[in-house]
Amino acid sequence: MDSTDGVVNLIHLADRPGTSGHSVSVRILGRYQPGILTGHDFLDCDIVIKAESVSGNFSVTLLPEDLEDWEDALATLESGRFAMWLTSGRTPSMKFKPDESGGLWVSVHDGPSSGVTITVPLFVPSPKWVAEQRDLLAQAREAYPREVVETSPGAYEWRRARNV
Image (tube, rainbow, N blue to C red):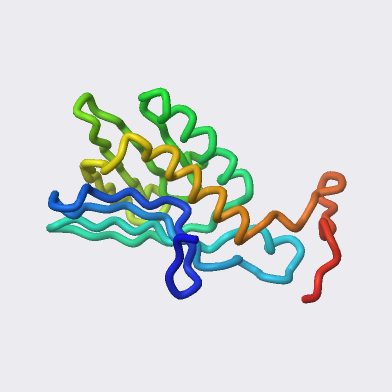
């Protein structure tokens, strides 16, 4: 699993070794409200951007639906098309634009808070980068399985017995 100190990467995109050293990651720090039924499956995350002259760190809480939306965005990116993720307006949004040279432009726009947008070009190291991101998504889902089910509108219960 791609983790350091209990942090799990949901997304990790970085330049090939020997290039600019830019990277963009979405790191899962843990559950938003562990053990509390209505907040247990939400994930506290950081979007981390590193480049030569700028770095950014944006806090975000992901819902289970956001992981499904990321899976859909990966399908779009796999076909070589532009994709957006986290477009609800409640969190920073992300845009992914492949270019003709095999690179990828990634933008993070923090509309809900600071209004800042950071865009970095990446020289992705492998033509299999989308498959690598799918592997990270699978690892994140394994580390943080969905444990709460909505049985009817506004009614929730644990999917399985828990020791909280």
